[in-house]
Length: 457
Ligand SMILES: NC(=O)C1=CN([C@@H]2O[C@H](COP(=O)(O)OP(=O)(O)OC[C@H]3O[C@@H](n4cnc5c(N)ncnc54)[C@H](O)[C@@H]3O)[C@@H](O)[C@H]2O)C=CC1
Ligand SMILES: O=C(O)CCC(=O)C(=O)O
Image 1 (cartoon, rainbow, N blue to C red):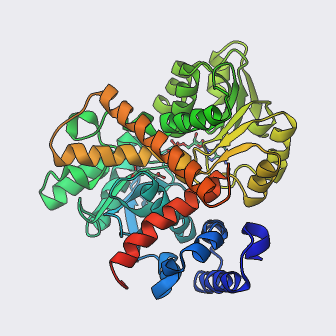
Image 2: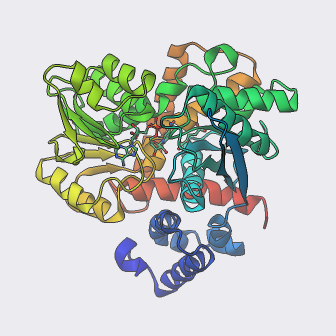
């Protein structure tokens, strides 16, 4: 099956991959997202394993699919009425061959070990692609910050960090934000770490405020980087973003900053969504208003349409029904299925680039590729956030703060480098234009070579 779904390969390679995948299924029963993420990487590898069999030595693929460490812990906290709640915390430290574990924390009711594991696995390859010295990890909790007061969020973060602090450190594991974890939460988490350890260890978390060890451009970085990557893909086809219609899903950190950068590049961003519905604004989204509604007031998206004449709010439904040239899924995993992909294709979409982690189902990816739509996988296209986190670590290590412009210039260079790496690797392995293969193979080579050099551990 590896030869038909992925790339043509010998029976021996197909057998090796089948055995490894079967082992992953047996060891991680019921973890569908983790299986999906592993399968997608393995499907890109037959051609590498045939050209570079030494990368299979020492059961490297088995080791690559097994996290180095997984921590699960209890997080008790007290709400404003004095009731005690118990949530579950997770940190999966997947791979440290390239540097300390690095990756965000997600606070959302859907978080479980499967979700954190798939995210940490993806993060390992993404971080390798940045060219920075960072390994892969991810964490979070099934805590739902929605509707909670600042004081409740603070107490939750303090309890979460009381356990997490044993496992992290600037040379060990460096968490950051992800869904449901922004500047407010990073502040509370850092404060508690500092209190418990009695150290101002700036490099232990990224996404900090600029006044206390943070980096300029980190909040913008994932969305801005996504648009740089998208523009590079278009450039290869002699196209440009200017004048194009863009649709983003989500209206959080990644979505809003992607919309901002796309608008600054001359595109018109006509729609975005949240978990309740979507808004269409043919004039182009008013991004100041959107930031006010979603990032400051933490309100529903319908409040945007209430304020903005001409904008239409759709309760429920699918933002992918809005015709566009460029679709940027920036909300959550598996949010763009085959049916949505076929609608986008029917409406003439040219590029789909993932701002979220694994938002496009495998069936949808296949449909887009078959229709010759440019497709950028998240592990390459959304790597600007973690890359800028690594720049924050660099600034912390040298006790400096770069300007916004310098940081954004470095981000742009890094995104162009990632694009170049994926594009060239795909060509080198006979898959021109296949950014999924390019990202997976390049990430695998970087991590695999380092693991082989460091022995069987
Ligand atoms: N924050 C970062 O730097 C990075 C985030 N990512 C990924 O980007 C995605 C979004 O993360 P953030 O923007 O940071 O989170 P966020 O918490 O700031 O925003 C998430 C947004 O998605 C929306 N959403 C959630 N489920 C939805 C659904 N089923 N349908 C429509 N909208 C939905 C929420 O309403 C919210 O607007 C996640 O997949 C995350 O893992 C990837 C790389 C870096
Ligand atoms: O900045 C970081 O370390 C985390 C970014 C992240 O969670 C991601 O790339 O998905």
